[in-house]
Length: 180
Ligand SMILES: Cc1cc2nc3c(=O)[nH]c(=O)nc-3n(C[C@H](O)[C@H](O)[C@H](O)COP(=O)(O)O)c2cc1C
Image (tube, rainbow, N blue to C red; front, side, top):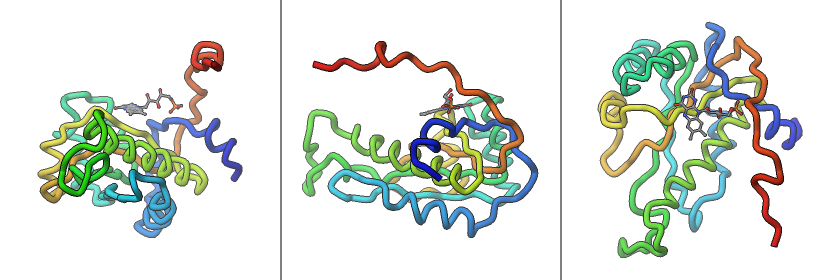
C-alpha cells in the first residue's frame, strides 16, 4: 500500500468485528514498528499485546477512568496494545541529566512515532486501530504487571473494522502552515 494512502485514509475505528486477531498478526505489526526512529536510537518503546479476552475486559472495566466510550472500544476490539516506554533514557544523558530543557518530552515523542507506525502497519494489513489517551495508568500497569521504570504512553485497540467512518474535518493548510 502506498504511504500517502495509508497516511490520509487510515481512520480511528471504534466498532470491530468479532473476528480474532492472532499473536502472529501482532508480531508482524510490531516487527515493522520496531523500525520507528527514536531518540539517539535508544529504542525504549515496549509493546504489551493483550489478546486474552478476560484480561482485556478487565482493563475495559476498571482501566478507563470511567470514560465508558473507551471501555466499549476496548471490549469491541479483538486485541489491545499497551504502548509503554522505559523512563529516563530518551532525552537524557547517560548520567541521568536531561539533554534539553524538554526533559521527558522526548520519551513521549518516540512513543507517538511508534504509535503511528503501529496504526499504519495494521491498516496496511487490513486491520483497524484506535489510539486511546484516556486510561488509568496505575490500574493497567498492575493488571499487566508492567515492569518498574516503564510508563504507559497510549493504548491502541486493534481489530477488523466493522464501520467505515469518514474523516473528521481537518484544518486547512493555511491555518497550520507558515512558510518563512
Ligand atoms: C494521542 C491521542 C489520544 C486519543 N485518545 C482517544 C481516546 O481516548 N478515545 C477515542 O475514542 N479516541 C481517541 N483518539 C482518536 C482521535 O479522536 C482521532 O484520531 C481524531 O478524531 C482524528 O480521527 P481519525 O483518527 O479517524 O483521523 C486519540 C488520538 C490520539 C492521537
